[in-house]
Length: 92
Image 1 (cartoon, rainbow, N blue to C red):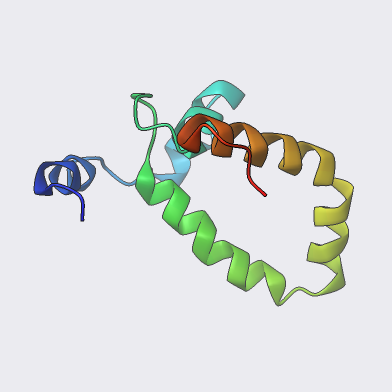
Image 2: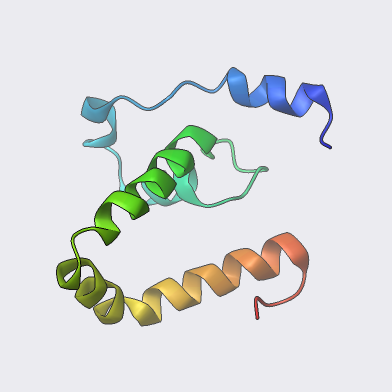
């Protein structure tokens, strides 16, 4: 179980507003999304929103699956980088 102060830190991070996100650079977006707690741009609320979005997107069927297949190299690279950084071991 994580210390309460870590949870309190996340509660103090505001959820992003759509109008603001529309103006983010690629670095701002990836900083907010990547699970890097040391990055001041990290936003757990954005990550949670996207996790919920995956379930909705999966209902799109082939359109979603085709996009996953097309983006697989980029997705794999990023997931591996994140897993390596977080656990010091590549994801299996």
